[in-house]
Amino acid sequence: MIQDSTSKTKMTFERENIRRMTGYTPGEQPDVADVVKLNTNENPYPPAGAVIEALRGIDAEALRRYPPATARPFREIAARVHGLSPENVIATNGGDELLRMTITTFVDPHQPVGVAEPSYSLYPVLAAIHDCPVVRVPLNADWSIPSDFAKRMNDEGAKLVILVNPHAPSGRLTSIDQLACIAADLDGVLLIDEAYVDFVDPEVNHDAVQLVKQYENVLLLRTLSKGYSLAGLRFGYGMGSVSLIHPMLTKTKDSYNVDVVAQRLAEAALKSRGEAAKTWTAVRTERKRLTERLNALGFSCPESQSNFVLARMSESAEAGARRLYESLKELNIFVRYFDQDRLRDKLRITIGRPEENDALLHALEELL
Image (cartoon, rainbow, N blue to C red):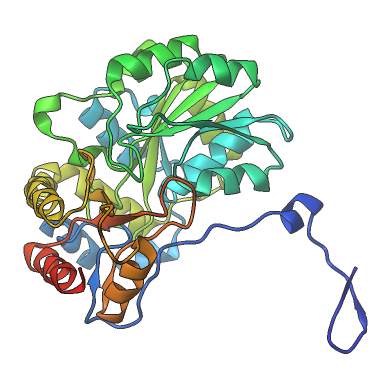
């Protein structure tokens, strides 16, 4: 029971675990267009031309009818791209739906969900919604995963472990060999969140899809939000063994979870990987330049394989990270500040177009 300002008793109908929890805090979305927006890891370049043409080609008749319930045409395209079967693929309403569905499908309430710390702040929120405790294993000082990570998760009884790779917010890439060792040793499901994998340097030759073929307990998350410039579409997909995909596809997903517009555009996007890949190259080029310039200004940036960098304030900087974040915001330049352990002296900066990155660098030169 809660009291309002008129002292009348009001009922609260929330479950107790929902009442206790704190919800997810998204990055700021400014209402004005004239800003340098480097805070939510969007691709700064437009989607492929074929995606725009597919959008123009959707007629009213397609909107009148329900979409394909399992997004079979998209799953067939994704399977060809990744060398899998359509039965190894599930389409979701953004990558976040796959996260929620995985917890719902494979974890009982009150069973632990494991994460590395720090990481994507939505993971513990989704666990709390399902009334699951969270096992948090701190990353090493260089943002690498501890060698006893799987053992610690097993000792705590984690039924699902979620790792984002490349890591957010540092951009560090965990090798396929280490991921394979974790998968082999882990008693539960290993969900590898590959939201940023498209921006990994090609010479690294990083392909986690092989883990899906080797391990029954590995589930990969992919999204079109970052690499394909479709954050506004909310379309993601998962890849895993049939034993992981089938129960989600036939039991725990919403009846028509991905609308017809999203399906058509997602199909066009995957068919246009070559055009999307040009934006990945452009982002990698700017990532290298921005990192070098930030280091020259006195920041410390670990090597990133994502579309952002994590810039640590130097010891001699007069302004703290929070103050610098606020000062940049006053100039209509948005970056991300996290008020949490190990991140309070750092800013996460999305890689923008060259002119956006130049505006940021010029502002930093003035403010510092």
